[in-house]
Length: 67
Image 1: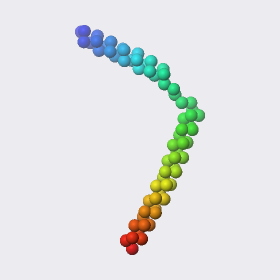
Image 2: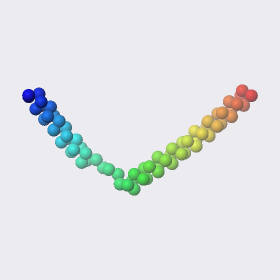
Image 3: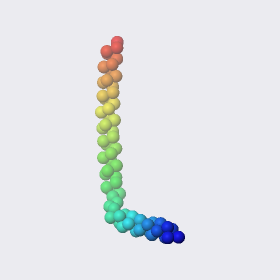
Image 4: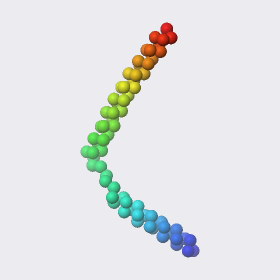
């Protein structure tokens, strides 16, 4: 029975500490979320273009070498 009480006390303590930490979290505004999303989308497109160009160049080089 003491073991059960100990588990309940630990669980209660954990929930209280988690709630305290959650109160410290800064949740971004919708504007901040949109801006961060746009940065990710733009960087992803730039990297896709860069890698596509590198791949196209490498493909042409290999075809030149084996032809």
